[in-house]
Image (cartoon, rainbow, N blue to C red; front, side):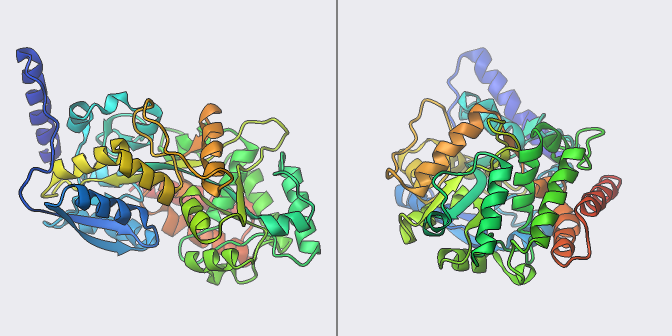
Length: 432
């Protein structure tokens, strides 16, 4: 196979260098003009800001950037990567099917050349896939993270104070009581989008982390043999979400709210809490300093383990890409360059990853970014990271979670019924 042959050539070169004692020079972008073909996700400025800084430091490299919505990327990535002018850098909504169809470049050679073995192994485990496309979590390296994001609960400080909240809830019951108090006071309890890309998957997965450990959820996402999402803990989480829907905690028009509308309404003061990721931390700090806070989803019991969706902002290199070495150099630069790491924290609001001996850039005390970075440390200490449930297969978000979550909001699906339907869709997709 073409992909394996390319990888064997690279490994042979590395072996030869080792035998002769020759130093291995990591790939660069060279000095000749390079135009990087890039495919980024709409609404997330971090990759573009990093690309601009990269061009500033390496003027011979420019970027031809195309953007698309997450749902469209899930559907269109196989076609785009199959084209002769495949992206040098592409945001990857899912990896397994792309690896199975040999559409991504194998990064094992770069792992050695750039010394990515110095990165914590846990940063890269979600980016490893066996050659046949499953399971994930083991095998070759097929992607890298621009940073390592995490979801949790943003809250409006002014509304929280009005409701008597003096510290974040420590249990799920305390969060329930706070939401009920908001509803009674005429405050929108939760602002959440659910149009197009199933935004209620965020509170659902946070609830999964409150009811049970992350390992069974990761096994399902990684397509481990016998794994299922239809567990007692997931059913409890889905039932809890259904109860929030029935209690009127979400906007009545949630199925018509898009992501950017949710952000606008929440920042405008509509909603006590919002389930979202730390990539919005820089946005809050820049445009609404001091008005919002962040906490990890509390566990079911006080003092319990925290678990939350925490995943790399995943980028891969097309197997047919024209500038593989330059793309890999960019991915290494993002994790190791001082200015790139600073942009990553300020704009992305997330841990920039990379070698553990590199410092995390300083942030403003009391900022949302300070809160999200601290929460990320808690999650890392408790080993509570889950990959996103949308990444289990290339089509599970579009064909499973999104329609079932919309039915749940519409009152025509139950929590347990949703979990059962998604598991059936998952099994159907894996059987193809």
